Length: 325
Length: 283
View 1 (tube, each protein chain N blue to C red):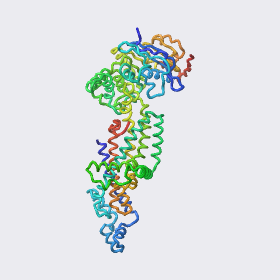
View 2: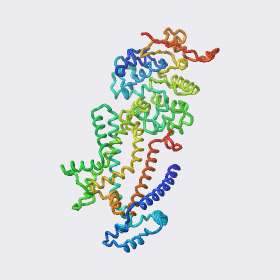
View 3: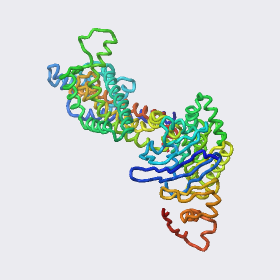
View 4: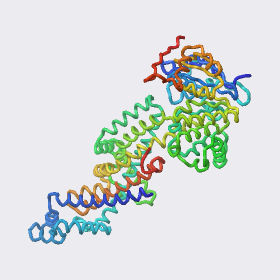
């Protein structure tokens, strides 16, 4: 537990560093939000622009702006969107769960199916199915996310129309909560597969390699010598050891998956954080962009701590002194 | 007296490579048979073949031969002809095995108590609590101190000698008729080796099990064996009682194996150990 407490303390410092870095980067980026806002409202004259800059506190020295922002964030206030004139926290919260749903489904799909495929192919490494899965994995790994997305849309939404082309809900639907959930799940299939397929390919390859190694280990031979059925040998004795590298890589890749979600949300018009981030970049909506960056970094840090916890639950050797023997 | 286990004309291949060729020997109840020979002579493959583990997880194949085993009912069955289901009921139950490296032979992610209990639950149909009681009894039998506390420990939390005691407890937990020990003391230091060999000898006397011990160490053979089978290059080159082998070995290879045991004072008058001649067994 001490180790986890220390990790949390370190993480808070890390998040503070991320806030300072992101704030500085956005401050240094070219472009002036006051001009964008003034231009949108149809009045581009210097007096209006100066007024907007003063209202937003953009004329204050950099350190004052930074100090004020860090203080606000510490109190849970991520500022107000320049664009929507709404609190950033509210904007993010409404977009958070679609992204969670998308990333969570994609991660679960990739890990569960990837590990199952890896185990299956490791048990029959020379079978035609195993070779087929290897080819599929390499293909899945090689395809860019946006291209996979477009391909799936053409095949399954346009040609055969099994799934909707884009969005998260059918606006025409008027049903109870169950029908609404089914509708969301129906919309979720293609984006989740698009985001998950690249990781599915990686996890299936990784678990196959790991499983092949573990199946040759002495303790698997001991389990067989005890008279255990092969299924129990594989799923109890080998699998728990074989998933350790998959858990590590999945934890480390969470950040990448969030960036992948940005592309997928754009392709499928999914109303998540990724699209909000992309829009805020184009509209120079610094508070929203900063809020999303801070949230993403915090999520990555939290997922890494959770990975650490899961890692310790799986492998007792790591519970001692924080290091594997 | 009829043997408990009789290996006859066993030949095992790995692709085009013959790892064991025409090996035969018998083991009787309460007897310890040592199979000796250098690395790669086919000793371990012979042991894994008796368990029929050579065909699981390796590319080995039993090409010819019989492995006759007398079941508790008194029937002689050929293990080579048994189905995988039938073999699972025998493995760990009527014939069990101890391996060379106790650290890697125990699963690192489960407690040692759970790993031993698993075999008891499987073969004796006990519930978890009764199985734990049996594990505790076994841990005390193999002289693991603070047995109750040790049951919850993981393999990496134990010393090499303690881990090998756990392996022995696991192997004996279902009262097997045959115990195969594949180099059980090779990975242990000398004082622990003596303790483990002493323990195995005591347990054999208590349980009446037949013991097949595989080793390259003639010191271990002298310590525990009744009979000896010497293997070289996949074949049996000599067999006899331990006394015969030690006192009047006939084959040059057996003599060379005996000569390879370091003796106190053998370096007297020398700066370096004397090189020994390579002995090839000519069939």
